Image (cartoon, rainbow, N blue to C red):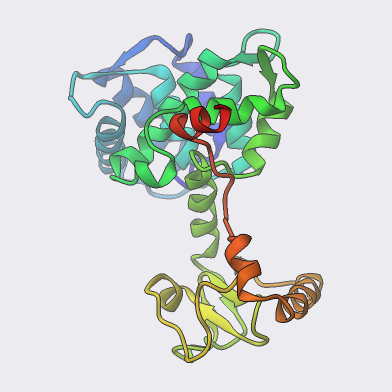
Length: 288
């Protein structure tokens, strides 16, 4: 699916009249849409695609995510959300499209419809057993978090939703991470891992913002390996593309500042790679 562009997917959605988004699709209809999608990919790219295999694998994944009880039906919004999330398109465009599917004719989305969208999206990490890491299945905290950008109004605009999404909220950060993983697959960084000495570093590169000239490859970082004196809890910067000169200068300045900061400072200012969403219990406690 990552070889399919969102533009191509939208053409197929329109040709199969997948509106309104809350209508149900049966398995036969899903198969027809997937078949058309992969046949269009084969035609546009001029490549040989094993259409039956791709359709079978995509159908199985969609059913596992959105119809785990195997009722044989899923909402059109579920189907479109699944394809849009995995297709080969920039994350911002994906968020724009997903928002458009729950917005009204005036381009506004109320809390109920935003909740529907977030519920559909969270099914992807739920199927992998990772939903707890993304704030859980309850979407109410994410709705409240997003509507802080609505200026007190009862509906949110696309620009406000995108502003929130750009902060990589906990419930949706997996989509941005998925995009970065795909981008990093073929990337090589012309530097040496301070732990395993691999050079060049392939995939993700993690640069220490506490120690100068300390870089860690994705394998060592994700398995918790560290060289003596270079603790992984120190602030780090993740790169999935080669660094630019301006990024190198920025990181040098940040590292220099961090050299003069105490351990207490870092314990009081934990580094997060996403916008945390407040749980219902936390919200109730803070309001009392």
